[in-house]
Amino acid sequence: MRVGALLVLLSVGAVVAGCAGSGPATRESRRSRPQPLAVYAAEMRIGTIRPGSRRIRLPRRIELRRGRARIGYAVPPGRARRIVRRALAAHASRVDVPVVPRWSRIQLRPVRQVLHNDCEATSLSMLLAAAGVHAGQLELQERLPRSGPLDPEPVPGSTLFRWGDPERGFVGRPAGGGTEGGFGVYEPPVRVLAGRYGVHLVDLHRQSPSAVRAAVLAGRPVLAWVGLAAGPYLSWVTPSGREITVNLDEHAVVLVGAGRGYVLVNNPLTGVRERWSDALFSYRWRLLDRRALELPRS
Image 1: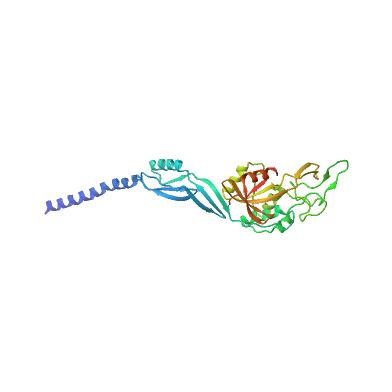
Image 2: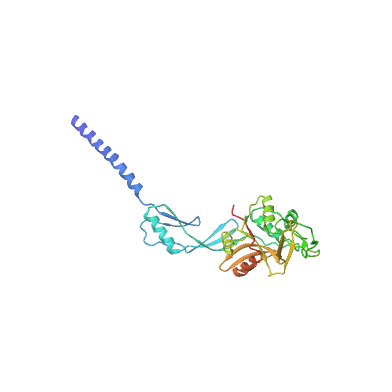
């Protein structure tokens, strides 16, 4: 009986030892087992690839919604596959592949201006709406700072007259009339007014057309100053004594989309969304010295 009991104890011990001995090896094998690779593009999961897969299939195009914007991206196939293969070799669990934005559409209702010269206030009302702030064009026009007299005044001993500075405030009469019919305002006072509503706008003054296009392709609307025609031009002296020359066909619009060779424009003058070629926008934008304000994504 003692011998039998001893054999039983030895057998149980062997079994226990065997189980204990195989435990770490099993955990180690589980730890080293390759995991599926999650593939992301533009922060969206576009597929899962299992280790050992010989064929890597990825979508060539994806579409995302970012707030008010829908954006279409292209996935460069060759570069994306190389990145995925390196991630598989490294036993990674996630990889992000590059994308190239191709088109965008920003859901923003066009608004028609009600005054002859309040295109800037109307455009700002659209930009604020995109930020979730509702302020009408007349309210914004009233809150814009003014610069200079309502109508030009003669300057003794000079052929130029004195009028306001659009870099400092609105120049002339918003509803038109007077001797010159009013003019408008440039981006510095508009940017300050947006800040009073808690909205920060990025100044794109004198940036390249490609920088404006990149912002719109990323789903960020842009308020841009354009010249609807190449003149006429007019010169005057500001209250500070600075001589300026302006394009009297100055206008403000909001860019709300882009695609191959074109931009989409909410035009306050017509109250509709228009499609301008890249060449036309670039030409008109340069006529106003490349002035623009971008609404960054929050």
